[in-house]
Image 1 (cartoon, rainbow, N blue to C red):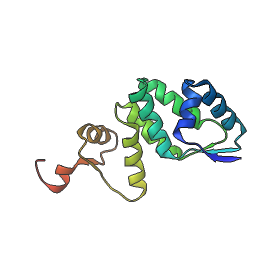
Image 2: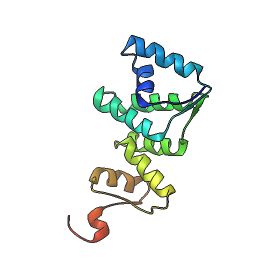
Image 3: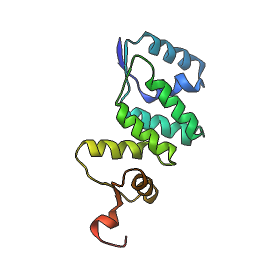
Image 4: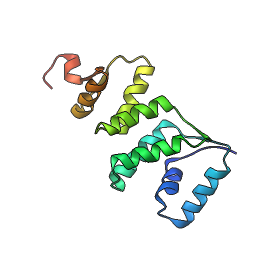
Length: 139
């Protein structure tokens, strides 16, 4: 069986917070011959662990890496690595993924109103700017 795992399936398997769903999620993941994990699933996963459950960045990164290392998991590893780099630098996993995938799609600069995301990305790649920088205004 080849599945696409939703965020809640991975969360149940990792968090172990609902006995019935944990058992079902783990059984499903063991039986699957391929587990497709779209990158937005990891974005939600990181967000829920951080904001919903108060997990630390290192715990989130270890969980995502462990999922990616499962032999049957298929995902966009470079995008996930970009998300992990951003997460470990103190930013949001999703911003790292967005910047990476935007570049892959031909974007040359990550444009955002999020000053902290822009600052982190500038330090790592230099290809980020606040909207006001790009349009020449103070706002």
